[in-house]
Each structure stands twice: as structure tokens, then as C-alpha cells.
Length: 126
Image (cartoon, rainbow, N blue to C red):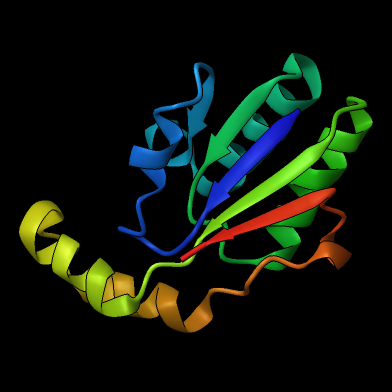
């Protein structure tokens, strides 16, 4: 099974992903953005039981991941951590200390995952 853990910055993705023994963290892959997505899709195709953690705000990026998953013959599960913007901003101020505009931007552009992207299952955690 392939599991995507997605949501806006500071929604709890990294903490939630700790329960998965094998997890690719988007922010920890030292490649340019297009190459990161390609790298992740290739790992999904080749490895099988793996979790992927990242914002994945755009539907088309998630579709690429689902297609890679199905090409490998695995079930595709999306876990969407749907935390309130206020909570994510508080976490940014208290722990991350990046510019809050990053969190606000992703809260505005994030496209919630839907089954028509090809997921076998979507779990929304609020």
C-alpha cells in the first residue's frame, strides 16, 4: 500500500508520518521541485509499501502519485490532515519561525483530495 499524508504546512504531517517505518518526506529530498516529484513517483513504483509526506496542494501532483502507485500494483490511500488555519499559524509562530505568508498561501490554494483523483481511500483527519 502507498499512503500519502498531505495538508497545509504545520497541519501535523511529519508528526503523523512517524508511525510509518518507511516514509519519504518531501522537504527532506535535496532536489529541485520537478525532480523531487519525479523521484518520489519512481520510489513509489519500485518499493511498494511506503508512505509519502508533503503538502501536495495540487490535484495534478497527487494524480501523478496515484498513477505511480497503481503502476506498481498497490492500493493508494490518501490521509488528509485538515487542520484549521489558526492552529497551523500558531505552530508556525511557535516552532518553525518561517514567514506566516507561506502557511496562508497554501491554505488558499490547497485543493482537497477527492476520489476522482484515483485514490482507493481518502481519510480526512480534522
